[in-house]
Length: 485
Image 1 (cartoon, one colour):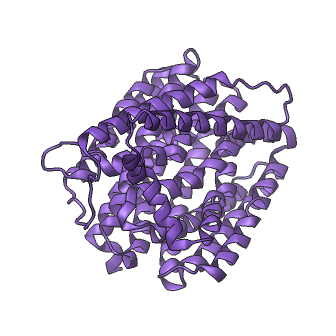
Image 2 (cartoon, rainbow, N blue to C red; image 1 turned 135 degrees about the vertical axis):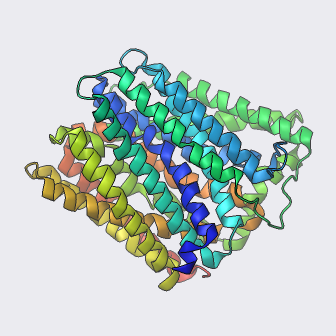
Image 3 (tube, rainbow, N blue to C red; image 1 turned 45 degrees about the vertical axis):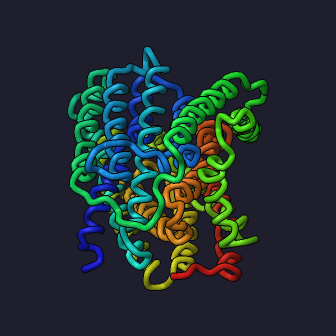
């Protein structure tokens, strides 16, 4: 137990709490708020796209890796960490004063701000974790991080729903949710205090490879690229009248790809007029990618494909979970108790087992077993969908799902940490974790429409099936590119 009770592990427990608190407030808890506010199911699941900030964080991770914030006595990582945590607090206060039943657009803006700030915090915490301990400790740090993350999800999930129920959630009152989100903003101070009392990682890397002028130009270019992305996305309205969710999904992929192309073209023009120096762009974006390709060669493509697909069964299923529970007749208290409270402890247990397994049996074996049980557990939801409402069945399904999710998550974090070079910690890990969420989140946004088309039981069978290619990829990669433990 010494490795789990090490001060570095305990610190990651608190950082995990700070990282896990915001995500449900733009995901699961927000979906309950939107249901109570009378927002349609298809619109609610589209709100999960706010979490695409977690998929796009690789875009601004080089800025966090290279741009110094002049906060005295804090250091590079801690300065960025403090700023991101304060941004989360302000964003939570902002969304608490919105009312989705009247001003849905402001609630959407608030959710995007929370997701952006939270994703930025994740970039820094991931880099901090990798830089603060050797690879042999990463299994323990990952397990403690996930434990803290899930405890925060317990607070933001079950805790927020209990608070909403206590304040009177059955009859919609916007002041109920205002109080809930303000309390969550106050709890973010745990992360702020942890940052202030933690040491800066001591690693041999050049933190600021770019001049101050280059850093400022990169920052301006980033905001211009984001503006171009938003402009292109709003310009490309959905021209399809077909209600088939798969057609809508493929159109969304094309739409987002064109947005990336327009943003990339703008950055290309900025480099052509020498607003961004080519060597600066190479330092920030090209070098981390070429470093990864040089280390893994042709196998790099398979590894990136595995990263992009590993959590797809879990994420696509999870977006619609709360709506499913409500549709099946379970009330908010039951969801809070069994899904958010006991489910979180099951995830923590799964995470500890997953981190320990990665140490004892090897990362890839733990990764394979995690993917297998994560996909298989979705079949239990199909069973729940065709069964009469029954609390015992609900507990069995939720427990199995959360143990498998925790196991797979811990094993995957260890795997990603092993892939990351200390030279480009934040940028490479952000690229990996962004890729992990991109395709699943885009598909998850259509989960409500898919359920409308094929029903809950078939939907959960579908999410189990799409996890099968992941098992084949892990087996293949294990043969040609085993992880150096």
